Amino acid sequence: MVVYEIAAQSFQDSNGDGQGDLAGLLQRIDYLTWLGVGAVWLTPIYNSPNHDFGYDIADFCSVDPRFGSLEDFDKLLLALHDSGIRLILDLVPNHTSDQHAWFGESRASRNNPKADWYLSAEAGANGGPPNNWLSRFGGSAWEWCEERRQFYYHSFLPSQPDLNWRNPEVREAIAATMRFWLERGVDGFRVDASAVLIKDDLLRDNPPDPEANDEKPPPQARRPVFTDDRPEAMRCIEYIREVLDQHDGKLLCGEVQGKTDRIGHFYGNSKPRLHLPLNFALLDSEWNAISLQATIDAYFNALPQGAWPDFVIGGHDKHRVASKVGQSQARVVAMLLMTIRGTPFLFAGDEIGSEQVPIPPDRVQDPFEKLVKGFDLGRDPERAPLRWDDTEGGGFTSGEPWLPLSRDRARNIKAHQGDRNSLLNLYRELIALRREEPCLLRGEYLPRRAQNDIFSFGRRMNDTEILVGLNISGEPRLWEWDGCGIRLLSTGPDCKQEKVAGSIHLKPNEGVIVKVIR
Ligand code: GLC
Image 1 (cartoon, rainbow, N blue to C red):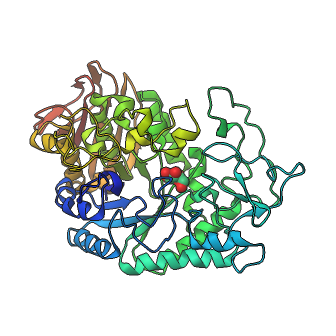
Image 2 (image 1 turned 120 degrees about the vertical axis):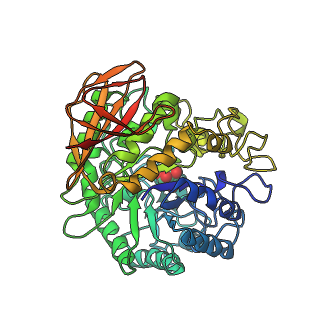
Image 3 (image 1 turned 180 degrees about the vertical axis):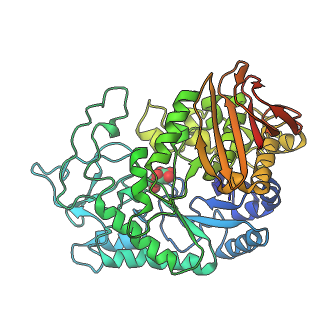
């Protein structure tokens, strides 16, 4: 199942206010069906003052009016299901907006019924923050609350206070919001910031990061030993999974922080945690055959026995892959993503090779960019609205878009649909091939030795063996292998299926898929 991430705000506007909405998304279901995606993951659509792209939620069981209503949501869900597409929502259990009623109550005094729903602490020795913990978005992670004469903790913005997951009432309250959506029929969740749900109860200071230097953003000056990936955070994920499992056939994926070698823990041991901890290793890897070979091997090595892999090549927090590797290699990325063992995740726009859109300083929206300047951390360039056609509003809106659209007007969905050699049509063919060849879906992964700038691997299921050879360079390369087979697909133009025997001359930036004949 291919998972397609949609940020509703950037997908399709239906009312000319410059922001995408649920009614707009509904109009585009035919496109999703045409492309062949199996599931949509929708970033937050809930009521929010929108200081952090909707990840600051003021009411978990609502739809923000700028996206529509609960009725629009139900209509959308029904239409997706009718088209055989599942819907996964973002679940943000770590924090709320400071506009949430829970926080309003909690912050008012030290002894109200919700006083312990968020993380509060006494001032440090000099009246400053309780310890040296840093917010991801810059500065201390502690904010003074005058009413309580205490500090409260925020992993992200001061307007995103962290919930206290040690409090059983908080767990139950989040479980209730999950049930609200599960009973409406959603097919699962992507858990936001799952690794930071619990912070050290002794409030121990984080140590300096020995690798920190002036080139690294200030929030990375300390190693987040006592704030991230605590053992008790794993218990919280297990709890979320238990709630999910009370409904049949639902999926839990999740954002996990840290290095690839920690990813295995997020699957769970005796108790299950996430089905799919999201794996960004491809996006973080150097783009050459030797590095890819190592990145992918390290990831597979980190997986527990029986764990199902996944690969993510785009997201609302990550720079666009096409900007990283270039348009020619974007075709190779497509082939790698759709043929390697694991569930593929892509972000709307990746299928046409959307690139980072330059945002003029006066139009910057992302708080990360505003607060931690000079480190290319801004996420607006990847969040720019999708271009459906080459008109001024890009077919996205008839109004003023909330972020500028790409100036590269030719790179749009309509144009790509009409060009049989486009990246979009390559994605579509690859997705169709995954369906036709169960070996590509479920076959085991057979590593091969990267050589000559070619990253290659095999997939095997019963008697079927499929080989994939990807030329990671911009020059012609010889891909050496023995045997013969049928070339099912190439990233090159006008590819026809044909018989191949032995070594194959790969064109610059070419990838091929070969079904071995025994
Ligand atoms: C997650 C989201 C990111 C957001 C942050 C705070 O990392 O993916 O977009 O800024 O959580 O909620």
